[in-house]
Length: 461
Image 1: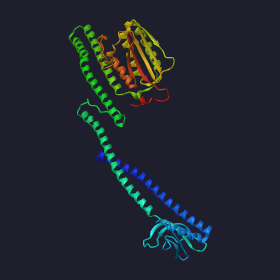
Image 2: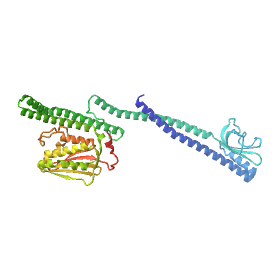
Image 3: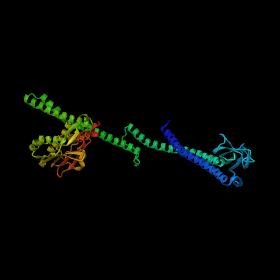
Image 4: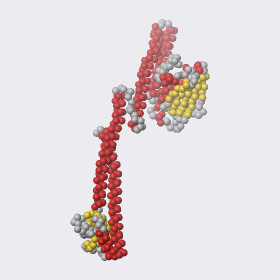
C-alpha cells in the first residue's frame, strides 16, 4: 500500500476516533441528563400527591388525581389501585407492569392508559398508602425516546461527515507530504545522475521538511566544495609536483652523468634535498586530508595550550632574531586547558610562526599571544609584513594557494591550509585579519569549562 494512502487512512481514522470520542461523550451526557431529569420529575410528582394525601386525606387526594387527569398532558399517568391491583381512580387502565414486584419508590415499567390497547414505556413512582392502596404516578418516555433517537441519528450523520472530512484532510496531508518528499527525491535523483547543482526547495516556514532540506543543501554545498577542492588539488598536484619532480630528475641525471666525485656528491645531496622537499609536500597534503576527514580524534587528550605556545615561542625566538626581527610572547596568566591533539596544535602554531618569519620578519616585530575569552581559546600570531589583501585571504587558505604578489618565495602553498584543517579537526577555525600593516592569524578553538569532561564535539569522531 502506498505511503500516501496510508497517511490518508491514518488521518481519517484519527479524525473518526477523535470525533467518536467527543460525540460519544455528548450522547452519554445528554442521555443520562434526560433520564435523570425524568426521574426527578416523576419523583417530585409522586411526593406532591403523597403530601396532599397526608394533609387532606382521601378527599384531597381524589381532587388532586382528578386535576392531574383533567390537565390534558398526554404523558402524565396517575392512578389509585386497591391492594389486589384493581383500578379505582385515574387514567390508567391497569396496574403498571414492572420487571420486579411492585414496591415503594421509583421504577421503570410499562403502563396502559384507559381506552388504549398498546402499553407504553414509562418512569413510575409507587406509593403504598396506609389503607393498603397503591398510588401510582408517572410519565411516559415517548418524547425522551424520540429525542434520543434524533440525537442518535444526528450523531451517526456527524460521524459520517467526520470520517469524510478526516479522509479529505488525510488526502490533503498525504499530497503535501508527497509533494515535499518529491522535491527531495528529485534532487537526489539529480545527484545520482552526477548533477550537484540542484538544491532542495525550501518554503521558509521552518518545519521538519525545511530543516531536512536545509541539512541536505548544506551537505550538497559541502560535497560541491570538496569536489571543487579535489579538482583543484588534483590540478595543483599535477602542476606543483612537476617542478620538484623535474628538479629531482635533473639532479639525478647530473649525478649520473658527471665523472667528478665532488660534483657527484654535490648532485646527490641536491637529489636528497629535492626528495625531502617532495616528501614533505606529500606528507603535508596527506595530513590535511586526514584532518579534513576528522581522523585523529582518538588521540585527543587534555593539555595546557598556553604552556605549549610559550615553549614554541622560546624555540623560535632565535630563528626570529636571526631573521632580523623581535618575537614578543604574551604568556597567559593561568593554564589554558584544551582537549585536543597536542602534536597537531603544535604543528599549526609552528606553521603560523614560520609563515610570519618568512613573510613578515621585514617588519621587525612578531607577536605571539594565547588567551581565552568565554568558551573560546585563541592563539594569535601577528606580523608587520606586507599582509594579505582581504579579497585574497580565502584563496590563501586553500591547498596550494600561493599568492605570488605577496609570497614570492618558493613553497607548496600548504602551510595555512594545514592550519585550517587542524582547526577544523578541533571544531574551530583559522581567521585572517588586517594588522595595518601586516597579518593577524588567529587559531580559534572551542573549549569546555569543565576539565573533568570531554567536549561533546571532541569525543565524536
